[in-house]
Amino acid sequence: MPETTSAGPGAPPAWVDVEARARTWIARAGLPAATTVTRLAGDASDRCFVRIAPPDGTTRILVVHAEPIRPAELPLVTVAALLREVPVPVPDTLGVDAELGIVVLEDLGDATLEAALAAASSDRRDAWYREAVDLVVALQQGGPRIRRPDALPFRLAFDIEKLTWELQFFREHYLDGYRRLALAPALRDALAGEFRTLAEQMAAEPRVLCHRDFHSRNLMLHADRLYVIDFQDARMGPDTYDLVSLLRDAYVELDGAVIDRCLDHYRQSMGVTDGAALRRRFIRTTVQRSLKALGTFGYQITVRHNDRYAGAVRRALHYARGALELDPDRQRLRDLLVPLLDGDA
Image (cartoon, rainbow, N blue to C red; front, side, top):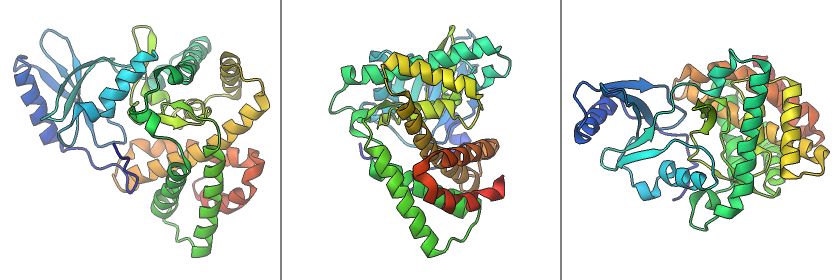
């Protein structure tokens, strides 16, 4: 399945269409007409999520796509099957209606890691993050065992083209769109050159299986364990990519001690002998990942008019600035970018 990189994700289907299709699915499934349909907060994709609740209380999640689907080619289905082989906990796929564009998933509830952290003790928080790092380790160690040449995650990678595209997306939708900056052609060219250098360095690192968006909104607490959702964009990439997604999460800020403990736990679990080199890679990935996140937030806010991501902009900026200061290879990019970022300090 080719990957579309020429534009951001399309708009999800209109709610009136989503509800109508959900009602059609309910009728086809033989569920009572009294079954309720509740819209849930979505992600940055072209899908809608609804919870259906029949009178007997056995809820399910319907993932409603904008168009009819082909299950054998749908990453939500195929990648889930791969991750179960690792094994990594993901919601069970309970059914598919290709004509309606609906995938039926196990309902994991509403307790994201992001939400649960607000009332958690420091010990509980540490335990959850240690468990999350264990899932990253499981992905990286299990990847070679489940690798199949035809499987989508092993055909996609954070290569030079993809990483550069994400950085140009940041320029287009954060600097140009969100900040409304009119960059001179020479500055655009200079940024493009620095983006390319960063992408080349990251793409040259050994690749492991990555979730791609491994953060607190995509980790669910269910049955006393963490489950992973929004995994359909899994691909090969740097070993620090999911770690940065988790520990430099734009939705949750962790103190340095938690990050240090998590990196040390990862290093020991993976047998990494050079902790300083791991930290350097972590910082470099933080630069790219934070800028990529700002591009996504800018696109969602200015193009999709989705303010759900507005509160995350400041934290992503903080991470980007901090990593630019710490990475000695980013001096030129730092000099170019920091004046453009300071307007939202």
